[in-house]
Length: 47
Image (cartoon, rainbow, N blue to C red):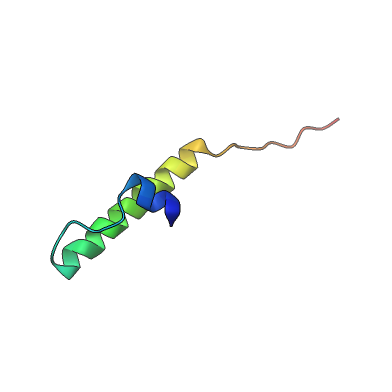
């Protein structure tokens, strides 16, 4: 949650509940994309 607040903001900016849901979903999608791009991929190496 801390990372989300740092990147997206602590409060929702939109007024209507439906729009707030969309704003939160977009924020989570952005955070998931950034996490996926930044995480390392591991491959098994035979010795």
